[in-house]
Length: 187
Image (tube, rainbow, N blue to C red; front, top):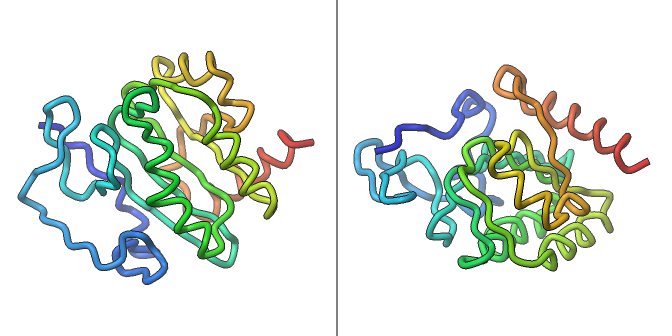
């Protein structure tokens, strides 16, 4: 069993299952019934299943005024077999985009492996959000997972950023840090 929980210190600020604009609105969770698995290891029941067999997520924060969302991921990000990026886009981020979210921060420190396919979904996503002044970034992806991400040049569309202290920050400060980083990156 894997007992890593999604980050919960912002729950007093935002709860996805209580947000009518969230793809997870109305979801119910068990604290005791573990049913989702990664590599045959059960994961904490607070992680959200969004259709991938190996990757789970938690929408930690969404700010519709500042147009950003912070999403934490756990598991294996597998575009080669499961096409996880397509599932994430269609079932989560496209819904958030339709609600005005154009800046996405994906926290990937619990992504154990990354397997790439082609870059078309990343390029399309980048173009979609860039039209609204948005962007997509990945925070804190482990070195072993970065290898294939960089090899297939996905960083052309989705930069990798390290911000190890994000847990000690409020969501607006995480956003400000990443937004300032992206302003410099895009210049």
